[in-house]
Length: 333
Image (cartoon, rainbow, N blue to C red; front, side, top):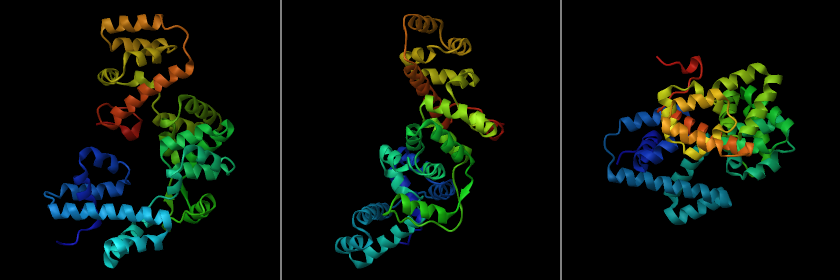
């Protein structure tokens, strides 16, 4: 069997995993890798059983080798793999693992850490350090960490995330050593583009409504231009009236009546009327009746319901089933 390139192996792995799983994996890859792997997938008509078996075996061996490295270091991994796979196969796996580690994102340990551990670890760090770490971890985890920070620190960190353009690899390496003594990921010499408005929007999209509003409010005072750019890309519950009727109807089909009623508690008349216009007369009557008899409701519960609806909107938008306008860069033709 001919030697397969790395991208061909990745394509075969994606095909073997199936559409649902591979689509989730592909979303985590950088755009340039997505394009290259997608090209290989498109040009792979048939996957022979022996190719599939080899690629899956290599994947499992590499994953196990990585765990061995984390458990006991590179020498320990080599020893275990030699016994299990033989000297040459062990060397191939270690070489492949080393190549992968060279391309990994920094702060990989932070991506695996518990949110509260991260909060405790970052609380006494400089806001610029906190911002840099949050740029590299998952948006939902970054949102949780950001919401646990003191209010004045939240705004400072959010401002720095939104204004970061690039960071020297030397600085990243230095911070990694300080934050995690066992963390030894190597970074390429070129500057890595991190942070910026897009990253801040991703984080705020996953944050609680209260955290989102507080940060945007203070950003408007300190950096109105940055706040405007973020708000232009950040879809909120109030923006629901900007959706096309056909799109909002798709959204309402995926929202339960209880959540919808709770989200409208305290909403302005423009939003309520917009929702009513996209429901049947009977549904509107039921919704109004439920609102009338709902009684006093905690604001946090209302905001949680609104966030659930926004999550549905963003999910449908990402799937291409509806369209959220985001200014010139998202113009449709």
